[in-house]
Every structure is written in structure tokens, then in C-alpha cells.
Image 1 (cartoon, rainbow, N blue to C red):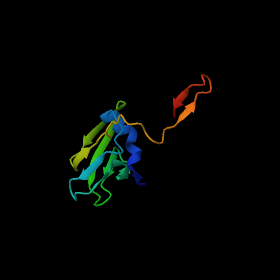
Image 2 (tube, one colour):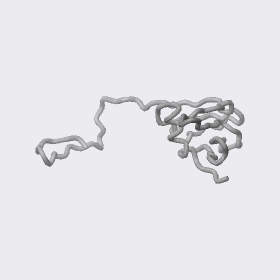
Image 3 (cartoon, one colour):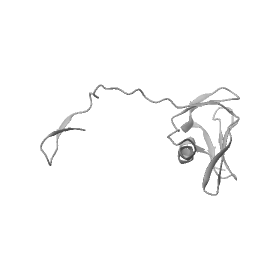
Length: 110
């Protein structure tokens, strides 16, 4: 079987959690390795999709798709899975510049 990285399950994670989770931090319950989901090892050719720890090879998650619905059937190997939102800031990004809008001639942020 060919191993893929965690980005291969991005769509499944959105189906299950309703949000982008490949940047979420995962902690292996066996060895304690902490890494983004995008860096985990994924095997998609089994009857289900198997996600393993890149450090020790333990099974972290198993997904199945039944009747068009994606389900996680096992997360026992995952000690934690957390997604932190970036802080919102009212400050203007210094890289943003005002460019004239070609149709109106007014300045617009880009």
C-alpha cells in the first residue's frame, strides 16, 4: 500500500468535524508525538482509511464511508486532537496596500 500524508483526509475531516482540520495538532496516545494532522501517515486502500503516527506507526484514526456518510469508527490511538483559531485582530495588515479600483477610481484594500 502506498502511504499518503494527512492532507489526503482533509475532505473526510471536513465531513466529520465541519471545518478544516489538517492544521490541527494531534498527539499520539502511544508515543506522545505531537504533530499537525497533515503530517500523519494515511493508508486509503484498506476497507477503511487508516491514519497512523509517523513516529511509532500506531493507529490513530480509522474512517469508513457508508451510504455516502463519512464516519470515524476509531480514535482510540489519539491522545488529543486540537484546533486553535488564530486570534482576530482589528489592526491593519502592514502588507495591505490601497490600490485604486479600476471601475470607480476609489482606493480599495488588497
